[in-house]
Amino acid sequence: MYKHILVPVDGSSAAQYAVLKAIELAKAFDGDVTVVYVIDPYPFTGLGSDFAYGQAEYLSAAAAEAKQANDQALKACEQAGVKAAGRVVEAHGAWRGILEAAASSRSDLIVMGSHGRHGLEKIVLGSETQRVLSHSKLSVLVVRE
Figure 1 (cartoon, helix red, strand yellow):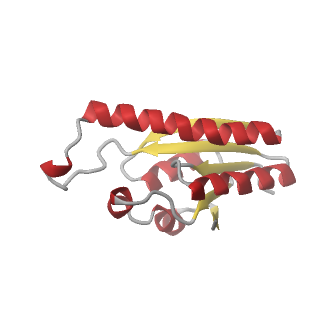
Figure 2 (cartoon, rainbow, N blue to C red; figure 1 turned 180 degrees about the horizontal axis):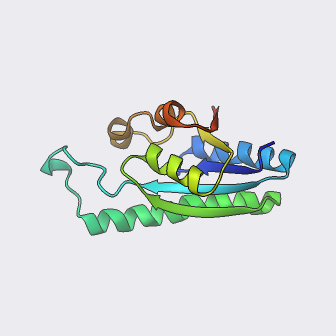
């Protein structure tokens, strides 16, 4: 039924829980998993200079965070014996990157946490899960911790 599952990760515990659920589904349906981390190259546009962060520094920190989140998810897949691949994509809005990654990887299911980042990033990003649900043509399984 579900042969290719996309799991967006952002380093949150909700995303890690989604990875565990995706692993269960992949094992049940003999499928594989793609883990994706989306970097917004300009996340603070319009907030003013008080939130300015050097672009190179931001991208470097985001890439390091992406690697850590992907590595953690891929390790869980490997330990469970599930074939998995990791991707990092850039998109204006995490939801857009998630949907683009789902299309390009030919996923037939997206499994994601009901919430993710906290603090200022959550205010800036809004509800990425809601946006994915609103715009996806694929089935989306939203998991709660």
